[in-house]
Length: 166
Image (cartoon, rainbow, N blue to C red; front, side, top):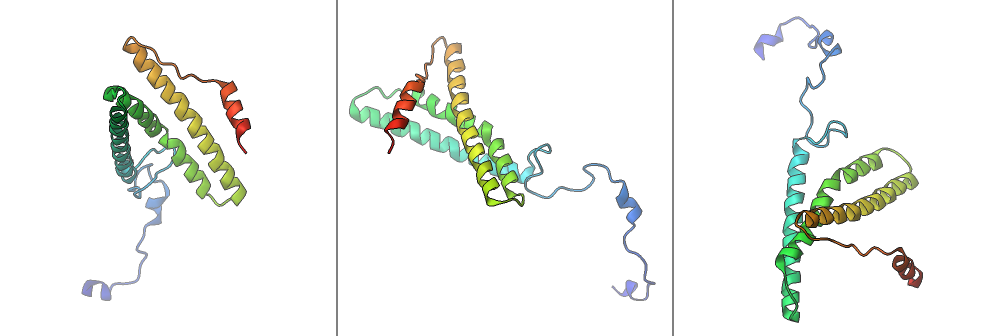
């Protein structure tokens, strides 16, 4: 500090160097770096933790379902139960960027109605893509194994159940 006490006052920043910076010249802040920029280091840590918890929950669900089936005297086929759970979890993890994008859009300064609309579209889209993706993962995997998967989709049943609602 003593060296700078008697120094003449000058500009401490050379603005010329800041005018034409190369992309990625500065370190990015931890957290979300943007849709096109991908996921930064902090996001990968969080995503990894979410994935680990999701897989743990899927395994516990499969084991619990197998135990319940065994108590009822049914076939507990742990492999099939793990396959159902993990196929769903894999699709959910692949769709996480949709939720991340929706949250980013909702944080922009807009009205409450627009935020609710973004959330509704994101949740409905996420749900539809999750079911579709899960069915196709199961169909593909079972086809590769020489078996088949039938989702038993029936619009008539859905409409019937919807009409029964109060």
